[in-house]
Image (cartoon, rainbow, N blue to C red; front, side):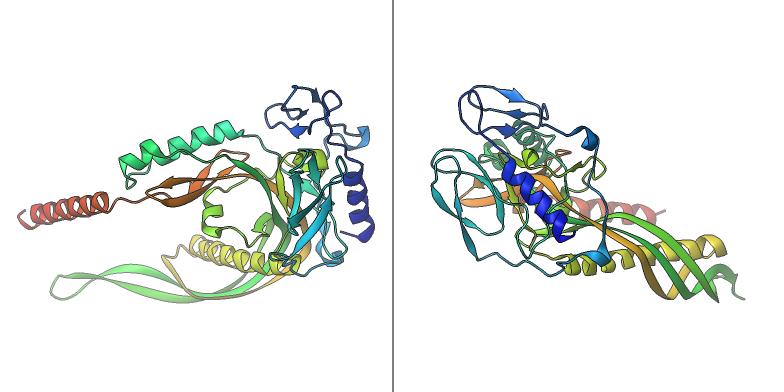
Length: 367
């Protein structure tokens, strides 16, 4: 994103007025209606979109022209924010880009850009409410076989916090030249009448192309990555061109993993994907049973990226003096997180499995 584009986003944010014209409270984005709503008096208003921007989604940005590529590791830094409504000064974590004033309740939407950061160019808005997130949580924990019944019955999520987390998406045209060995199995009968499998090996070379669309990479280091994977995927096609009104009433976080490191992570994951795709191609084209010693080199062309803010509900619950955290996808309602495990249930399951295996073994041995 160019400096001029970043400044344009900055100007839009500064022009945003989150005050309810009816009661002067802070208005928030409502996931159900897609409007700005006052939680106190019920006032609602459409999010104004210029005619030329109707239906506009986040645009792909040229990776080679990005000015700021480094990480933005602000985790321990703080900044002072002045509330425009009541002039109160509040200290915030520097990665936090949206919040409400603790004194008057006014939504404090910070600037999307800073001198040494990129600004988001797209947002996938919340489609699941905190109430729906709670309902999905209860379904999720009741389906956990190893979780104690007492935990399932007593687990009540703390108040949900809606957060927009930063993600990079990458598009790239990949071209890969490869070499490998593939094998075809055949059954051989020896002189004693016993059969065994032998493999005939052949060498092959080739060329593979694939367009990678919207490869998703998390741009935050704050949250458990394994937990975040459990709530994916997101519907990335259902994004909107960034406007500050869409994040009103929610927390947002600037990226801490920069564009360059994000692309490095994407390359490693894309490389793993290409490895599987090329092996599948070799097996299919050569009617092979196995592929070995695959080596390939890949070039990436026309690399583009988007910097998206994706919606997540965060919460936790307490069981036996221990806190268990979980997340809910703000688009799909998918739940991921930690849950208590009952050692007794695990032991019973293992014993039952061993008994079943022993019975099956006994049945076949006595045939």
